Image (cartoon, rainbow, N blue to C red; front, side, top):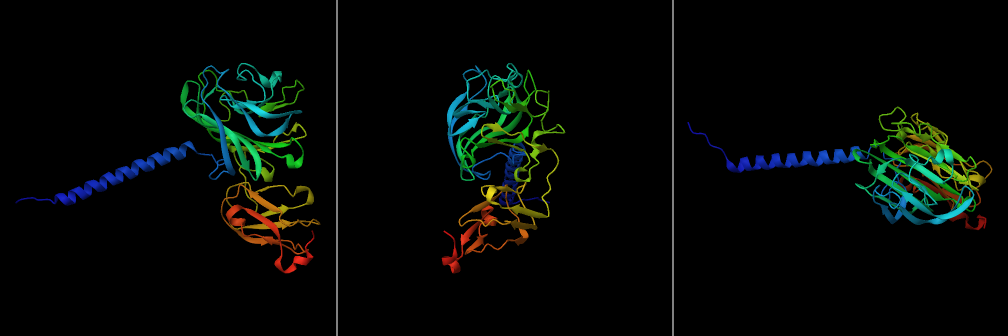
Length: 363
């Protein structure tokens, strides 16, 4: 008995196997990349993280000769930093920025205790940005000028198998007073290790020797804040519902006084009814949903005795997709009406002039 086979069919089968292998390898690469970006919701990006634009000024290279491996740039606006006006910063690979040139680490100069150097430190330690240089530059966030410094997928000095991502954001809030600004510490996955120390510092110091300083408990302690830790930094969020995005700590600086965030590591649960209270005092407030998506929740907008003016726009922060099952809006009068046409595309709603009451709208 003779056996035969169709070579063309064998070729097809081999091609199918090759295709499946390629598909498997491609999927594996995507999986690995996704693993690197785990817990990265708080990191702001141009594509989907809330940055309208990003103009890169420079990139930090690595940790060698640390007194030289830094950047100095104009942040694009003036801030009142602990009572001193400044519009430029020094950036360091080791995870902090400062308006003055300084020694490079709390590991060697304890800025928190000495309080002799003004520092803003989202995650200071012995890190190495050589594999993935850290970009910094100006941006636009919620129509406000901003400055962004990102340490993305960086390693520890001489120990690059474990990596981490974090970010510092300054947002101009001169709409509330000259020099006022908001600051964000944003975190992705953190598995950083250093060959000399696994310590990290999260906090700020005024540098004025006046006792104005704050550090997140756990700072300066070995192996804190990593993903495997019960209080991993990606779990932290502000307790204020307007700022409750996991992996983000929000600070407000008003008249040179920096706030300390109220925070928790507990999971945030979006309430059944999202209530937004609009008053004359908070017309510039951006209301946060605390997570990326909503699903069949109720939206209740209240204005008390205040009537929003024409063209006022309100934005739901951290808004991704989903739907509200019910939306309750107060009547506006004075020829004004609500415009919800961009609620699901941009997370915004605004007050517009009603076409049928043009003569009644206040100037």
